[in-house]
Amino acid sequence: MAAASFTRALSLHLLLLFLLAGSALGKTVKRDVKALNEIKSSLGWRVVYSWVGDDPCGHGDLPPWSGVTCSQQGDYRVVTELEVYAVSIVGPFPTAVTNLLDLRRLDLHNNKLTGPIPPQIGRLKHLRILNLRWNKLQDVLPPEIGELKKLTHLYLSFNNFKGEIPVELANLPELRYLYLHENRFTGRIPPELGTLKNLRHLDVGNNHLTGTLRDFISNGNGFPSLRNLYLNNNELTGVLPDQIANLTNLEILHLSNNKMIGSISPKLVHIPRLIYLYLDNNNFIGRIPEGLYRHPFLKELYIEGNHFRPGTRSKGTHKVLELPDADILV
Image 1 (tube, rainbow, N blue to C red):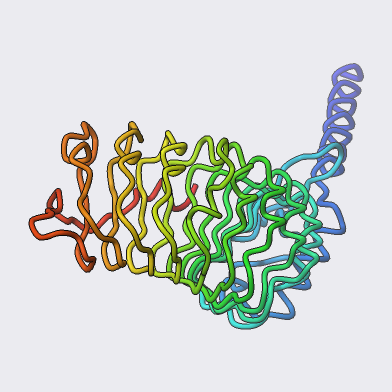
Image 2 (tube, rainbow, N blue to C red):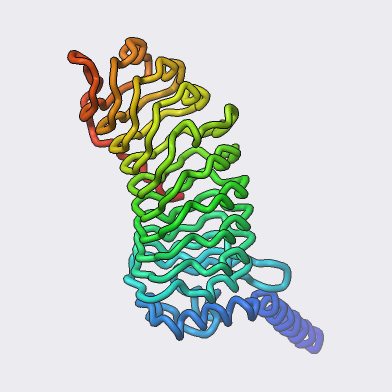
């Protein structure tokens, strides 16, 4: 009888020690708790109705806050993802977010954030995905974005950013998707972006960019992985240079609504995977190289609004091009 009582007492003691140890292991690092509670108290986001308790990673019977993902790191939990989108957040970009130093994904898209991205964004060294599209952010992009060396996806489209596209974006070796369309960027597109070996999708359409395509792709070995290039609705000038054929992985080339001139380079025929080619509403002349009509993959060729010779024809059904959701957000 005494032995059984002792065994039960020992079991209860060990269980208590285990629970205490588990509680200690599950403690959220104070830096992250402070940062998210600061955001909660200062911005009045609609999402806060589900942000119950003081610990964003959850505690006891309380679950993690909505949109907050945490991971174990040593004896503590850290916040690795913050996804709070389409909830009409109003106000400046929350600088306290930049104190979440283990953040890998930051998604605040489709809100009403205003003002600039703070230079402190460069502190998020582990960030892989930054999605701020569909807000009202403005001012110039801070060069500190170039310090996010692990960034693979950067979505800044549909805002009011202005000034030049920072050359520091070329310091992001892992970058695969760069969306800057529908802003107010001016100046030339940095040719240094061609050094990004993993860049697959580049969209700078619907801005006020100037310069020539020749300057942009002047590096003969640039953009080795680029598949989709959107330069439409800008103020680009000059000719369509022969160097475009160096982009051998290109599938989409969108040059509509610029001020480009000259004849169409026959080198386009040598881009093996080209599927969509938009040349409409420029000042091109001459004829379309016959090889493009026989190209095995080219489905759509838009040529309207130019000065081609009579009889020059388009190709395809002129369907509106839409990228799969997988390319928009990962």
